[in-house]
Every structure is written in C-alpha cells, then in structure tokens.
Image (cartoon, rainbow, N blue to C red):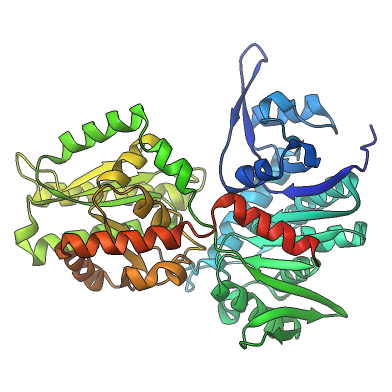
Length: 487
C-alpha cells in the first residue's frame, strides 16, 4: 500500500509514544508513554498533521505494526497522534540497538570503555554495524514516504545518527534536524571508533540542516570531531562559540536546547494520593528526625551509583556523628538487563548497599534504603522529602533528576551535582559540585550539604527550580521546530 505524502511535521525516534502487550488470545493492550516529545507534539495539536515514526520494540509492538501495515496505529491508542511503527526484523533491531547504539555509541559518548580490554571492533561488530545501517535506512525510507513537500523532520538521538544523511539523499526538499540527548565525546575519545564508522556517524548528522544538543559543551565537542575526523570547517558565532559546521558545500547549523523539567506536571502529580501513601511509607522506613540523601537513577553505568555508595560509606566512616542521623534513600531501577555488563553492575549496587547496612546498621537504623522496583510515585515521594539530592554521573547529556528534585522538594534540598552532568551548565552555580571519580571529595560534599543551614538551602532550591524549569518540554520541542522552520 502506498503511503500518501502528507505530513508537514515528522518526529523520528527509536521508542514511540505507545507500547503494546500481546495477550495469549492475540489481544493488544496499549500503554501510553510520556516525556518531552509527547509533550511537544501535544503542544502543536492534532490538527497539525504531524507523524511520529518509531520502531517496534517487542512482540506486542511488532504485532501492532503488522496489523497497521504501512499505515498508522489506532489513534485511540496514541492520544490522537499519528504514529507509524516500523516492524524491523528482530535480529536486525537487536544488533543495531544493543550491538551498536547501546554498546558502542553510548559507551563512546559517556567515556565508559576500559580501554586496555575494550572496545574490540571485529567481524561481529562489522555485522552489527551493517544492521545499524539497515535500521537507519528503514527509518529514512518511512520518513521519505510520509513527508509532505518541504516538511520539517526532527530526528532524535544516537540510535538514528545516520538518518539525516540518508533522508537527505532520498528527499532533498525536506528541512531536517537531529537532536542528541547524550553528551558528545571529545575528538581523541571519539576516534576510538573505526575511522569509517566515526566519519559515517558525523556525515549522517551533517546531512541535516541543523544539529542540536543539550548544552554548548556537547555542541562544541561535535564540531571539534567534525573538524578532526572530516576536516570540516567550524563556523564561529560572535562570541567565538561553534555556530555551524561547513562540509562538502553544505552548512549544518548547531543549536543548544537545555531540556527543562515540567513544573506544572511535577507539582500536580507529586501531590496525588498514591504519592502521599508512598511518602508515609518512606518516612516510616527512614524514622523520625533523620535527614535524607536521595538519589533516583536507572542502573546505567554512566550514573555512577557505585561511587555514590562508596562516598556515603566514607561519610559514615569519617563523620561518625551522622550515624543513625541520616539515611541514603537510593532508587536504582534496573536498566538494559539484557546486557551482561548492566546485570553485573546492578548486582554490584545491591551487594554494596547490603555491605554498608551490615557494617553500620543498628537495630533501629538502616543506613541505605535501596529500592530496585521502578515506581514513579515513590520517586516523587523521595523528591518531596529530600534534604540532599545526589546526582553524580560520570557523564550525562542533561540529567532531569537534578532539575526535578528542586521543583518538588518540600523543605528545600541541597543538590550535590557532578560537573560532568549537562545540568551543571545551568545549575552548577547553586549546587555543591563534585568530580564524579573523587569518592573522598564526594563524601566531603555530602557532609557540606547535610550541614547547610535551612535558610540557605531554601534560597538555593528556589534558584535551582527557576533555572530547572526555564525550558519545559513543550517549549523545548517548539523552539527546535521553529528554528528548523525558519531556516
């Protein structure tokens, strides 16, 4: 069935706004998602004719995609949005998603490799890279089919780095933008990639009219990689920052859009009855009169949960006055458990928390309250009671937790923030900054944060919340869209 070229606005991302569970009787149960893209598309309204192209991630998704064919999913399942879900062969998807996107590109941009042993770019990687190319080509084909003449296309993240270039070749009439939600590696580290792969990713993104990032630091690193790997020209703005990259007769403008927290949603949702229930349970677990150090993360290798626990253990060791007076509420929700290295890391977090509790715990005090079952309402409850928020990633594109906690905190909290988080660019002035590798320094920062006077803590929180909500998801999306439309 031919697809009519009709969409004036398109979004492409690996994960879509809906997922499906497949019942034994063949029934499909949809589950709506959230996030900045969902908020953004809702901001432009259903009458805009926008189409979201995404991949089928599981068996339920694949069945829904097969039933839709080359058409769109049931609008009742998507909140009225037009969504085309691609049924990419499971082996191709797995190789592209786990083999390249999450095991190579993610590792490079977050500087996660143990370089004496990894990476190893062998024949298996080459097969995975071919799958990544095929996966990106499937998106480019679908977008080319869906897009109206001169349409605007917003391509999301490292999963789809090749799409802008592939789509440019298919539809040169389109206005194409790419947004990177991760950091971007500096040239020396980026060049761990095989030369052709390193060049291919850059060429892919440079196929767009615009390449956008969460911070100026990541945009500058991308431009530096283009110069080092491709010999491209960096076009500087009046302030000396990288404004565009000129390569092979084309110019790709660079943009920075620091995704902020959705204050209205967070404040309303955090006062719901289920959050109140979880707040009461957490307070009972913590005990009366105790301070709290809160972290909320998935067990991503980049989130640095293990060093955070080591720093807390060092705090208890060097400052015995905090024993029985503080609880580390650590939410470490399992992530990417289909990859061995992530399963091992999740287990290391669990074991270390148990060791701290065994070493320092007393009959009436458990130093670490570790929760591993994903529960958004409980996360919001922890935000409300946090005295200190620990956000210490090795490297992070933004880190919305750092922005969400100050918005929801009831009494005000002190943010202990890694200088390697993208959020540092906006929040660093009012946070207690740490080097994420420095366990001793992080322990000292936790002590400083716990001792911060109430008035100072409240003032800091007010300024943090204002900075954190400067560009909420709807505005974040719309500013990118306007920038691309305006050329």
